[in-house]
Image (cartoon, rainbow, N blue to C red; front, side, top):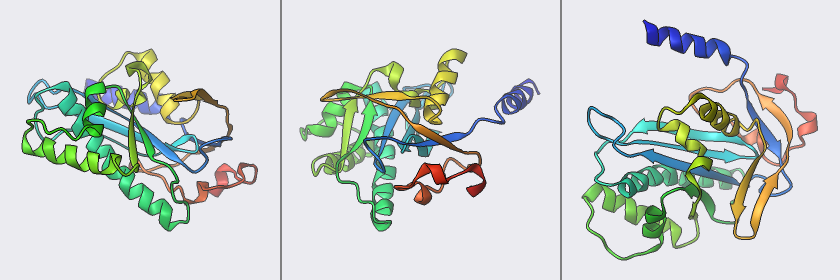
Length: 230
């Protein structure tokens, strides 16, 4: 009963939280993501918990948080399986955007905090894995090589998907949620330095099941939009 009351208090305190989409000077209509895994986080089965979030035009368009189906023998293995799940969604969204007439001209950036996982995605050297991890490895490598997906290292405290894999202290959880919902400006580190995106904001108050319809967010003039349109 205490857990139920805690959930109800949380829902009551966050009823007015909304997803916020924005128009930036760069990366308009291009999506990117962050992925993370909590290795052996389930104390009963020692399976890892994986989470990812994909964002476009400032707000999330798809996210997932779930326990992995198999126990992983290392942190990099858990991270690689999580990355594979995120990449599968990336492939689907790239195809959907192409059908809408908004093909992604560059590789979709997926930010990771595990250097071993990133190294394995770029290095074809064979390693001894169990079969389910080996399949994930080949799947990701086949998408990294033709420049469809790119795994990029990012410091752990900037991986907001961390909130989807484990319990965090309240300040960190709230800060990550605001970034995931697109309510605060954020910075991304690219090879050319830091790109800080400042946004003109509008919000979408209703969303269901971790996905939102984003067709209307493609290359639109936000000054003509209002909450009533959604």
